[in-house]
Amino acid sequence: MEQPFFADCRARVAVELISGTWPMVVIWALADGPARPGELRRRIGGISQKVLTTTLRRLEANGVVERQRYAEAPPRVEYSLTPAGRDLLTPIRALGDWADAHADTVLTAQDTAG
Image (tube, rainbow, N blue to C red; front, side):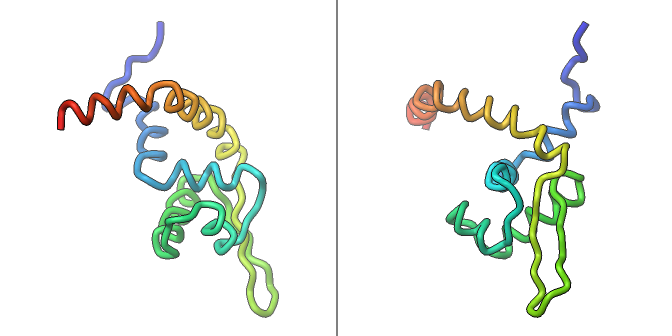
């Protein structure tokens, strides 16, 4: 029997991790490999440096992203997905597929309700 989706279930960990505007976008932007913050901002578009930094720190604190600092002048930092982060690409892709199939229905319902 499946675990019910209650407030204290383990699925909440994943939902809380990817909730918000940017976590899934940042994870997806790292799918092709490590990237520096400036490169991530270019890949993503529309994200401020402050929000990107906050999102990366949150994902790092949750074991989804890792930060590699290189002892160079000037210092260089790259972010990459951990194995747990790479495993998140599958459900993110599935959610994207769902959105492709159903976004029009959702948007129409929002317009009707609004």
